[in-house]
Amino acid sequence: MSKINDFKNISYGREAVDKIRTQKIQDIKNLSEEFREEEFNPKINANSFQGVPKNISNFFINKFPVYGYIITSVLHGIAGLTSINNFLFSPSLKKLFDKVTVTASKSVTSLTYAFLALESFKKNKIFDFIARMLDPLFVPWMKLEDIHLARGMSAGLTLIDFSQMSRLPKKSMTKTENFFANLKAMVQMLEESFSSGLGAKRKLFVKAQNDKGHTMALFGHLIMLGSMVGVLFGANQRNLMNKIGGVIRNLGGFLGDITMILHGDESFVLSGCFYAANAVIDALQRFLPQNIIDPINHFNMILNNIATYHYGKISRKRNEDNFNDSFALKSNPQSGFKAGLKPLVA
Picture 1 (tube, one colour):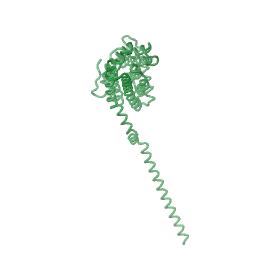
Picture 2 (spheres, rainbow, N blue to C red):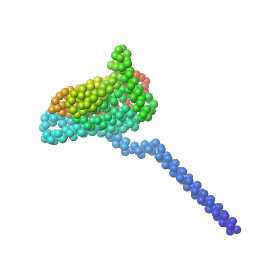
Picture 3 (cartoon, rainbow, N blue to C red):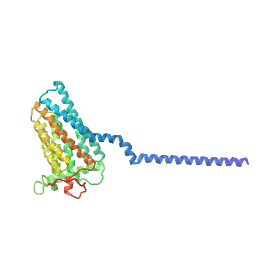
Picture 4 (tube, rainbow, N blue to C red):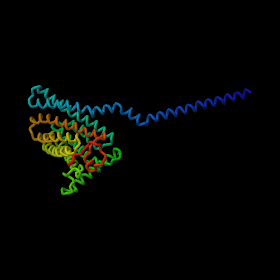
């Protein structure tokens, strides 16, 4: 009888152990499922990862440029006036003030463009990412008189990127797909521009519905060419290559600014107006004596700041899918752009 009871006790014990083991296994499975849901749920990841960085990014993209360009424009105004008549500083303090002003001005644009570049990278807009990153890579090393020259690499590629937006596939693309789609569109536009010649079927210097961005793209290439020549062979020097590169860069810039004014988007129009004036002054200052160009360049940076602020807004609009691409709209009026954004009729 005692052996039967012992067997029952052992049997009950095994059932209890099996029950506990089954419960533990289920607990582990539940914990694993919770972990997986937290790990792979996009909403949880988006909130937990993008919280603070998104706030910082918004500050540097939306608020920082406004305050930064106002402050640096005031500093450039003071630096320009005191370059004409130094009524405020001792010679050594004036030199320090000019250096601080130029450094602050370059830093505002470079920081803003760096954060715009990161946003474009997240949105898989790789040409815009590269174009924006060219500013903080080159401009910080330039003297005041060559800031506009070095910025041409960024401005030129951005202009090319904008001119071919309507050619890109409408589907969502990876970063690699976007890069090669832009590269293909850029080559196609160059081929079309030159193969059509300058006759009746030309793609350059015609009405917008026939141009479709070709003229803007051509001037973008001209800006980049002049900027590269000037920076590679004459950066921070007053030599012949600096002058040649500067003239080419500003010629392309001025003509490209005219196409921006005719584009129709408000940010394009405003930046084009101020950049056009900036380009003329920057080209002329390369042939003037050093003691004259300092006040000119300080005042010219105020125009540049206003233009660059509005130019940066174009990237923000694109990343928010709120950009009026009038080239695509004129080519296809039913292309689905938001109501109220009216293209300029050529």
